Amino acid sequence: MQRDKQIIKVSIYWIITNIVLVIFKAIVWFLSNSIAIILDALNNLSDVLSSAITIVGTKLSSKRPDKEHPYGHWRIEYFSALIIAVIILTAWLVAMKESVLKIINAEKATYSIYTIIVIIAAIFTKFFLWRYVKNQWERLNSGSLVASGVDALNDCLISLWTLVAAIISMIWWFSLEWYLWCVIALFIIKTAFEILKKSVNDVIGTRADQKIIDKLKSKISSYDDVLWVYDLILHNYGPNNIIAMAHIQVNDEMKAKKIHRLTRTISTDIFTEYGIILTLGIYACNDEWIYGDIQKRLNEIIKKHKSIIQMHGFYVDEKVNTVYFDLIFNFDEKRPENIVKQIKNEIKKDFPQYEYNIIIDTDFSD
Image (tube, rainbow, N blue to C red; front, side, top):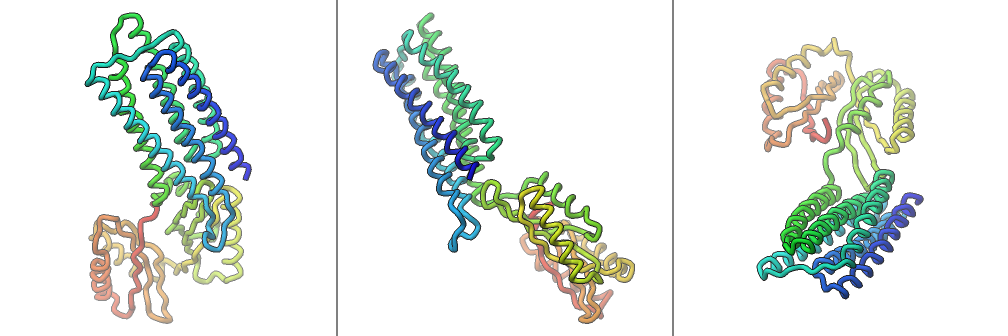
């Protein structure tokens, strides 16, 4: 809850600052009739709308889980960032269109001493606002604040270049404002697309950060009774709301009481250290020397298939004469079931006394 209040607080500061800038720029536009200034003011107005969306999104995302949404509403923040990116993109597409029209019509922007003062004030205001928002988004891990912070830095650069163009225009009567706005618009449109892409990826779900995967696997592997860790999956239900699943392999003679103690200890430690809710699945493991010949032959067969990344979960159950293992294929393999059939046929020639239960796994994490 404290995180939500902080994001809303930052957004309110953002709104107030941009409203003040809009008012001052509107006054200067009235005095100087500078189209460049009014475009800049409209950009600040879009920032106000973006911050309002951040507040609404934060309020909605902080709602408690309910029967319909048992994982909570945190992903609404990703939609907020997506909408903000669309607003930035739209505003700057309009600005670019206006700039191109001004270049075609050979119109010159007009500036005065009032314009220069407001532009300088805007540069300092946006710079300090960007620094403030940057510190907050890093601390609060908010996608919406990232979008707002990037926009603040862009506004600062825009105002800086507008100041340079204004001084050149006033001293040498050489007008490059609209060319400058076109270049700036292209840069910001590119940035908006990048934010849009990240937001869409957050909504769809992407591969987990490899650094987090490595840390979690290393932590889980550090327990004495854990022989192997695989199938680690992270489900991101919003900032600071991650649910993980993993399989661990233990000795097949390990009793339920000891397995319970092990899994509880691991899950509690992971939550304490990383704030991640972890569920563990258990795979049994034979003494590697007893069935080493089967495993060795399987490895030889599997090496022939370049699309297979890994075999794991190998276990032989003598009571039902079945060999179990999982195969991970890369995403380029379109028909993994055909390869599984080939492997079954080949291994059965050497060890016909067993049935082979092979699960096709997905490459969720390395």
